[in-house]
Length: 401
Image (tube, rainbow, N blue to C red; front, side, top):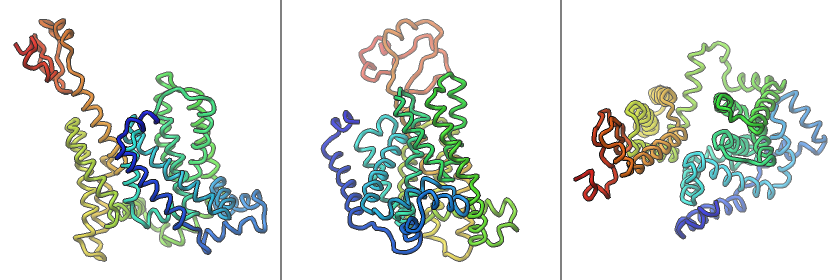
């Protein structure tokens, strides 16, 4: 990380510093707890009960999110401490997304500035509920950040100390207390851990992370209060939920996702679709992958542009967003997933194009029935005289002559 920052240009450092300063000023002078709703409830939670008694009552009657509820009860009376920690969580979230999306290049200030800029393009209502609202940050931003730390440990394979694996296991266990994050971690982790075990690379640290996520997810999902809350919230928001079939429930779920992606103020979705489309077109991956990615991007772009053209209240916009999100999910083209896939395709394609045949290797293979690789693409023909792909040697090399 330090080497990447030293190698960065002053403009890149100034850009990161400017965005970080904006976030710091917002936390210092704009964000505060509310005097009503959940903020007021958690601020007064320990006035007439101990922390253990409060968590026990919550676990049995409403929620299984034990560490999240504990943080809310302890920190809502200390807003300045929350501001410092939440500011650090925003930076950690963006840094981890940069590492997952850009790989080793994610250490560069330009990559982190890119993700920070995308963060500021998300709809204000979404950021207000998930990050700037004190209680909401405990339930959404903080578990998501901890989940990104766990995902990085699954796929970045290098030596870690016992303390490092302990902290990663704690992050994975904390992330599992958000139901959505727990499901995503298990869906990503189980096949990955199986792959590591089959290849003999599943170590004690991976076992600790797997156990932490599984055990804490079970504690959360099997809580008696979680079942009570599910029933109460279902009756509140969907009174006829029990009368719906599976297709109707799927329609509701995809409609919620579609309306989120199709918001006119969701600038991040529009920018992601445009940038990823350019990256996929430039990378030129395999034809099937390219068609699937561009098709999913097209549907996402359609879902985003539809609110500008279609009038609300007709039901047509809702159906279009459902169809768009269904197709996007079918082609695995959620914005962040597509961004990671496109960047990986760009990296693989550029690596293949930048690894020309060495002249000595070509000389050794001259006259032998060996296929030659050119420009990152496999040539289906067997060449008796393989050519060198180095552009600088195209005129003066023995192959050209």
